[in-house]
Image 1 (cartoon, helix red, strand yellow):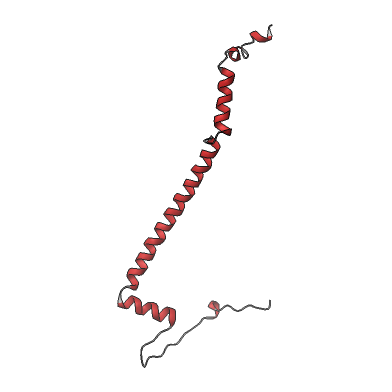
Image 2 (cartoon, helix red, strand yellow):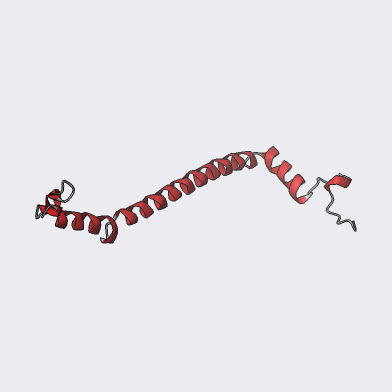
Length: 107
């Protein structure tokens, strides 16, 4: 009987402790609203917020680029640099430096 009078066993004599521990374990791990599921959902929310910030930054960059292209000078500069367009009676010379070429060496 000395075993049941131990100070560590005494709280378990209360009829509400063992069901309470069982309920807490059930709610933390096995329930549909468990801590593990909430943790996973919080991580998903954090990832989605990071994606949201990334796309907001991309939208602001695109708006700045759109404002630049919306002017005559910006549109002409874009056409000349990207598509090598030119005006009448104008020659375009494309200079490529050796370090900018994609040549594979036989080394």
